[in-house]
Image (tube, rainbow, N blue to C red; front, side):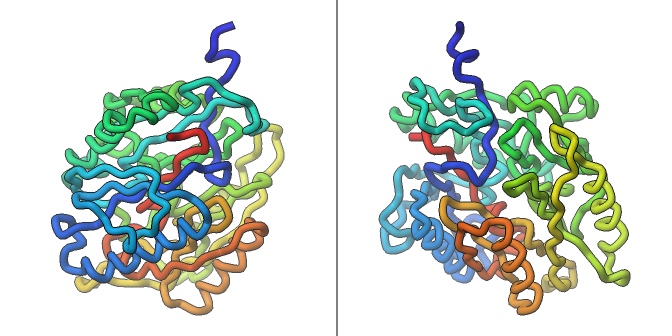
Length: 357
């Protein structure tokens, strides 16, 4: 029996065991420059919440960071130039060895993690991404222990952003047709061809495609992590809108109806939990920003929830998330500065599985 058959690859769910979280630190050469001090405050708050959850923090930056900036639980870092800070979309997508029972007690051999390095092209060429696209390879080449424990897979012939896919750890991924079929990513590949590539690379048995749902001001063409997220016990957490006057009302209602048609691998309907849509937030030019509570990050013992200084909605999102993750502490992170660059907590971060480095 070949090793790959004995220890099959699997795309884990975010709530499974983690080794650490990757952050790409803001600097004055990014679009954060006009509000750098404000966003650095938010990043330090995220970093503190991450290490408080006993997850070890991995940082990429263009300059060395002091321990008092990020805490002492930094298990690796590299210094390299970066275009921006959206780690979810330029970071490795990780597979682990093991079956769907999530048996982490097995003593797996070396290369227990497969690191897929897809091409990041600034969401279809909207923004420069050449520096960010080289981060993964630089990290892998600089860390010998990573080379021993993890297998690097060059997937640069295919554009895939981490925020565009969501895994339940059981062989199903969720994505949006608006993003994966958008121009300047993988055209002229068809939907069937893209789905076949996802199944092959990510070792999943099926892809659920959402054909509705996109937030105003979203640069990503409808990333799934702004709209719908998997949670334990066959639960889907999704953004809903109950205001007929809101521009998102019809599209999010159509998305909700499509979610009701989705079933688990054994044919049961998912448990649906609706997150509120934040009240409109606008930038200085009057453009609506894509604020969403779906952009949360699941850690080992906590969940980081983006909040927007909207007491009623913030509290409702907190309550719903706590119900889905009863054994984790919900940590609220004020994300009003993050959303000014059209992203939030999940967009800024990428988790690594337990056996990594």
